[in-house]
Length: 352
Ligand code: SF4
Ligand code: SF4
Image (cartoon, rainbow, N blue to C red; front, side, top):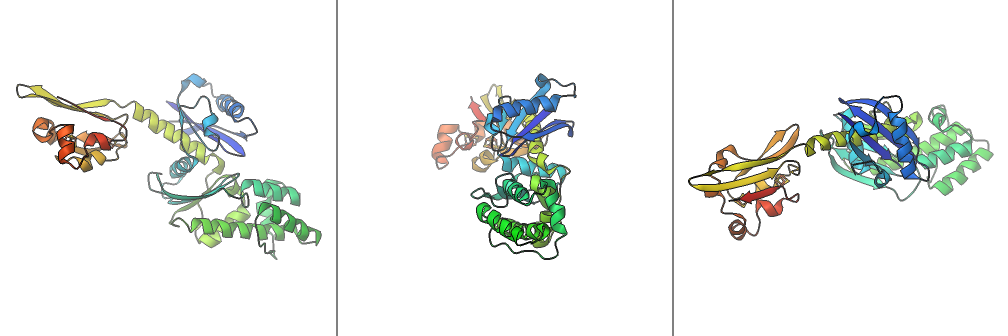
């Protein structure tokens, strides 16, 4: 089966095709002004030369700022979830992520399955984002992909009091006119961005391992400054820009497996009567609330294809009518709650 992940970011649009846990194709292009058109071009580029037709993609999930503008996506997820999932695919030990995007910056904590456990985001100001560094590279007349290495040759870093896009640009120009080297200006700016990134990270929990994602993580000068502050060597993917798209493709794979799961029916019909509980595993997200509230202890959680789902306990199947008085009686005697009304996906039905 083939799955696609599409990440329409504010500056760059990225996509991957996933088959057998391997990335078989990827594409990156500027997002531009028309996200719908970009996402269609991205798909053509992704399929180009693979011999795969669009109709052969089993499931597509979009993420990123333009995730609702991908007409062929089956659904979408937030870029925070996608980045956590993507980094977990590369480095399962990572628990803290700094995602430095084109127009925002996020600090994320995740668990060993790539689920987000905490995050903070800075999207109020362009300072320290990809857009900001593009502007600085432009002002200093250095190709964007070289500013990292240039900054590493600095021997007298210039302190910057601000990374406000407007003031930093003016300050950089002023230093340049005074004859300060580009390396020293860049080192100073990187120091200011690293300090701000570190402050953002401190608002989540800085736990090992640590990773940086997003296009900015290709900037070796900035990565070195952040590593110094965090006091951990960050894990960096081969192509950090693809991390969100990979996460989206992994969600597509998981979701596809999930929707293929069926409705399970538990219970019996015999001389003593009939009683059935059905659990739609395609809807169940394994939250466990039904098991928590059932006064008769009818439900348990089990792992199925790597997913947690609710199940009726084997020991309860033949005794359902004795254990369960039905929704109405249960609700009255159970402080107004039943398995059915705590299940936000409406995955549980009873019949008798
Ligand atoms: S209705 Fe009440 S007793 Fe019956 S399965 Fe649901 S929570 Fe348990
Ligand atoms: S409450 Fe619903 S979603 Fe949660 S485990 Fe039970 S059946 Fe699944």
